[in-house]
Length: 389
Ligand SMILES: Cc1cc2nc3c(=O)[nH]c(=O)nc-3n(C[C@H](O)[C@H](O)[C@H](O)COP(=O)(O)OP(=O)(O)OC[C@H]3O[C@@H](n4cnc5c(N)ncnc54)[C@H](O)[C@@H]3O)c2cc1C
Image 1 (cartoon, rainbow, N blue to C red):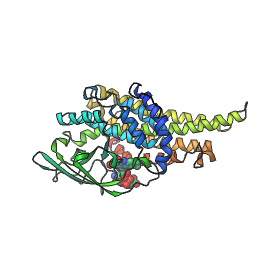
Image 2 (cartoon, protein in one colour):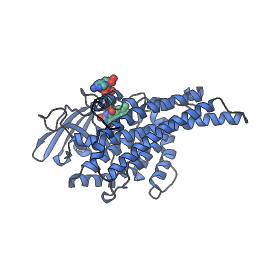
Image 3 (cartoon, rainbow, N blue to C red):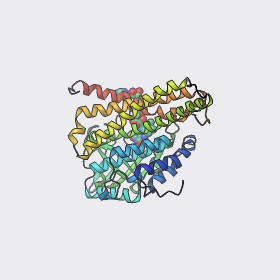
Image 4 (tube, protein in one colour):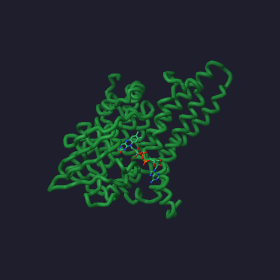
């Protein structure tokens, strides 16, 4: 990386430098070796970007979701795995900022900001699959303490995280849907790896499976129900920030298609290359995705700014956030496929500067991160009774 003073540039400028100078140049190796983008995450830590969303009075940058979404999209243009790690970390931070209003959790957020801690998520569970609103594991309490064991088939960058926010039933007697969110701090948590992460895409997220065991002060069981945390914060921020990752990787595909068409135009001055028309169509679809993501981020930021929980819990808002996820995850595949059509063999060949292989493989992960079938099924239920437009 160049010797840029990352702390004096704006958040967006810092993200730009990290994307171009660190994440982008390492993306190929991260993908090939399915390795954690350690240098990019370190640059994000040094640049103060891991703490962007934490309020200033707790030592963070005080940014809103819109600004963080911009950062995610910029990183995604360089390396989608880096962007996904950053997005998932910020989703956990958002949950703590909005729902960790106790002195102990506020002190933990201060530590996250001061030490650049990296937070991960364990919502998926063996036997439950992607139904994030159900848990089989449960929090067991003894006076002032909690114990949790969770069989987690996927914890992105679990081995590199300083803390993991895990869902669980409130008590061993609670039904599957009565969940809480538990902050599992590294020093109080054991991870035993159960499975590897050798996937088609997002290989740098290193999302191995683990048995997670945590024993700590019960002040680290978040006070709000997971039902509230999910509807007010985790679901909308996940869908906005994941979609921002996909926007970033879609932009990288458009960059390659544009490069191909402009090179063809330079070879035949005075004539328009046939693929230019496809590029115009591609840019229109990319614009749809950008507008979709940016308007959702703005809408959520407005509600977040005035702390209006009723707005984000309204049925119309939930339907819109679910629809954002489904649309964005389909548009990203469409965009990368169109770019492939334009670039032809140059896009299809591994090792070519215009290769689209990694982008296409990453793009196919989007529909699976909480399966679109589950999200559509949820919206189908809501639409049976929803009256607004
Ligand atoms: C890159 C990446 C990173 C991830 N990181 C994490 C992480 O850090 N932490 C974490 O907890 N999880 C993580 N996940 C897991 C993820 O978010 C999903 O929840 C999980 O992958 C779902 O697993 P599944 O596809 O096997 O299960 P399912 O969601 O159960 O889907 C399997 C099949 O069942 C169908 N299906 C089952 N039940 C229903 C239903 N009720 N309605 C409709 N369709 C249904 C689906 O259509 C699909 O065909 C990650 C996933 C990816 C791709």
